[in-house]
Image (tube, rainbow, N blue to C red; front, side, top):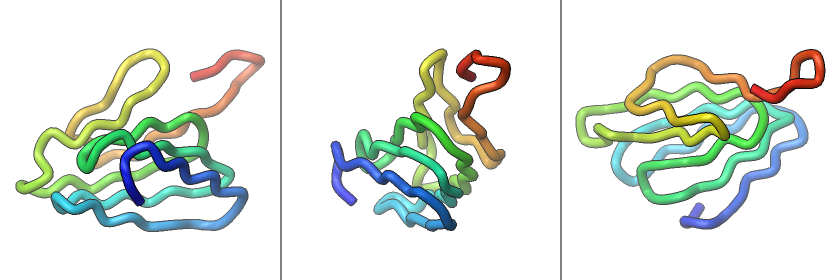
Length: 84
């Protein structure tokens, strides 16, 4: 994938390895945009990342902020009509 490309995953699981070493596992349904070689924007879906020493600063952008250098899962969706 290149910067600006969007992954629109209807179902299933995809693993992406970034050039600087970070890994991301995306579970559909999901929509993810590659912002740079070390950052993504999660519009919806489940995302789990693994950040290495060489990918320090890996960033996941969300509508209300960002997560940097996380090894945790992130879920973006709706609950009771609210986006989170």
